[in-house]
Image 1 (cartoon, helix red, strand yellow):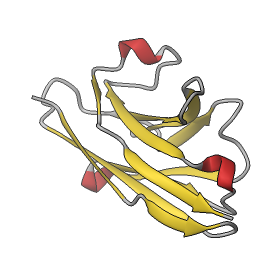
Image 2 (cartoon, rainbow, N blue to C red):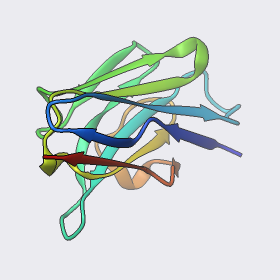
Image 3 (tube, helix red, strand yellow):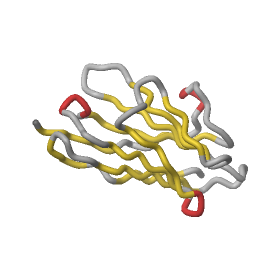
Length: 124
């Protein structure tokens, strides 16, 4: 069974940075994985940040994700990272990662597993 382990959220002051991690395990049906990231703020629609693909070690960003957010991965650890830079109070949200196989997909509904999310709170 595919499992995701998220970590790295927390409380940070405006202007600070955080790195979120998402490790995927339990997949045997694919040689590659993709980790998509979204964020969900209270009262707002889910926003797509982007996706990291282990097949080519490239990251693909949604309209929202470019700029202060950087997606990377470590294929040897089956882990993707979301670096959040120059954080602002409006970045406060639950950040979720999802796994898809074998590649990134623009349709989040097809992702096979989503984590519970990690809270990021940015104080002003």
